[in-house]
Every structure is written in structure tokens, then in C-alpha cells.
Length: 65
Picture 1: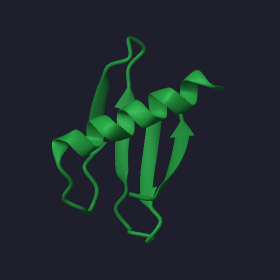
Picture 2: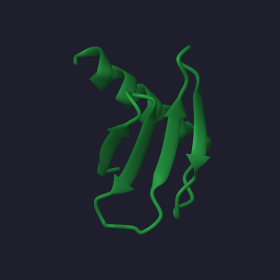
Picture 3: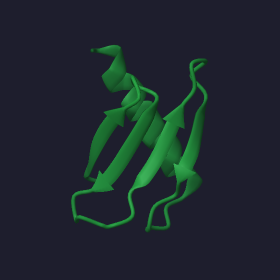
Picture 4: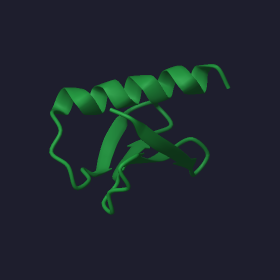
């Protein structure tokens, strides 16, 4: 899945938009303790494991910043 991830709230909120320009993006929140929650599932139906994959990818990118 090709997506654009936009970070806000000091690495605690992430908007995930597919490159197809869908109007309803996925929004994930990460707590100070590193726990993830889904604020908005977005306009697409994706399996729960895909959310975990996205979270892991974000964590990997943050580790290199």
C-alpha cells in the first residue's frame, strides 16, 4: 500500500492518506507509553493486521529521526 503519512502533535498523531487521494484518511494516535489507537478507520476496509503494519513502519521511521 502506497501512502503519505503526516505527523502532528509531536509524534503522537498520524494521518495516513493513500496516494489515490481518498477523502477519508486513516488517523492513528500513539500515547506517551507507545500504545496505539485508531481515531479514524478511514474510507477503506483494511484488515486489523494492516494497522499493525502501518504502526510498525511509523515506529521504524521515527527510530531513525
